[in-house]
Image (cartoon, rainbow, N blue to C red; front, side):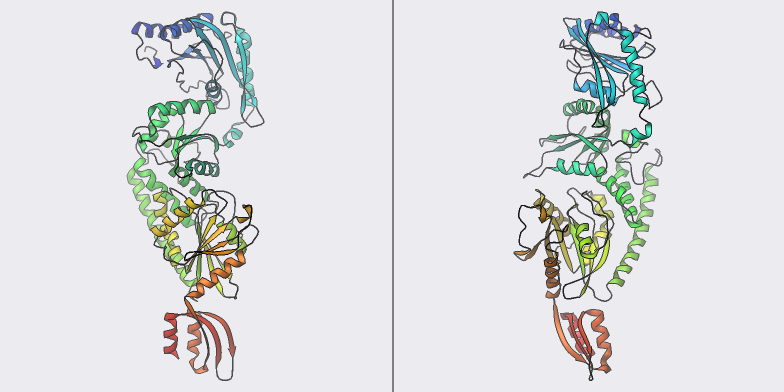
Length: 593
């Protein structure tokens, strides 16, 4: 079978293509880095077509691949001739620069490291003649944890130190092999973030960076695009995708994360162009939830959301379905086998929904049991990382995980607290919200989120230190409205006031909404918060002060069940009780008396 010339051959004459193909016929000795015959022919052909030409040379001296690029760049396919991944890939790349400058670019050095090449070499070409040659090799790890690139040059193409350059390949291979596979697998994935510019000062890519770090990725590059029509094939357009490909090579990116949801076709096309894995914001958030879920209900909810999201994307996913080695976007239920079909996924979705229904019924029974004494329920809601868990710990000594990360805690936590007057209440922490929260995730967690609708009071925790707290407040309000929880009494709790230049007054009012300023970290303002909560809870209740005859003791039981007892004293003629009752319960008490 004839060996193929890859790359961009548009406009290249058939006779010239045949001459380029003849590069496959050149063979080097095992101690020859690059023969002058090969360099001269590559330079001559480059001068003729004014495009870059690259060749991959195996260690035994044969040409493994020949590719043609544009005038400025050449697409280099990934190639590995050495099976052991703890070693270099077994091929070196030699390519031409038509502008006459033989110096290696950042893209060249990034490709050297990310493809684990034996060497990356470039030859400057001027008027069809080679000028200078530069060769690079993978070096030691620097202080930043990244591999250095050792560069030799400028060298004279007609008088190369071939033996020394070949020797450098084996030195680099030994150097690379000294890092064990386990250590390399523990390294964070290198991610490039891609998104459109936000409105009104809101930067969605900044938030995407926080999500990526939470998932364990190392963000090595960000791309903010001006808003324009979405390309159905690649989302960003083929030209911009080619630019991203070069950027990924230079930054040694393993992963591209897009801020918006991608279709299966867009994801597949982008992976083919970028030569790396591609995921979207939804996959990233689902991955974080999968790693954070601890309870049985949480794990079932995440798996259900992931399967519902993956079902329409099962066909044509490209690299996303073949990544058996792990990484961001593959956690949770996982791709247990590549041939999993829609029928099995649908069956699993049905099973998960049935299990969740049973778990939800059990949780509701526990919840009803806790509230059988009419103890008021206070729900903490807010944007992720607003400090809800820190506040819960401060008020109740709950001891739940509180980290400066998005979605540090996922499973709901319920604790009992005492209000200033001594009355008891139940404080419930819920999952944090975020902009563009995946639809499938909201549906899967709906039964948990709907606990908010049963709350007697909602504390909306807001990170006032964030420059985007107004946008975050709007996102939370939209989710609450979607859950039909918008009518519940509310307190806006502005947290992290210790990070402001001056701590605001603890409490104020904005229209009909009460506002409290606190620092959950050091406890300032929390007393004012509890007082405001008790005031709102008691606003719909009336205080009674009465003596109930001992013959009507069922009335005492009713008060304990329906209201909050503030004081009880046994007298000669009956039980003296001071308590808080709803208006509706007052009528029932009168009937009992």
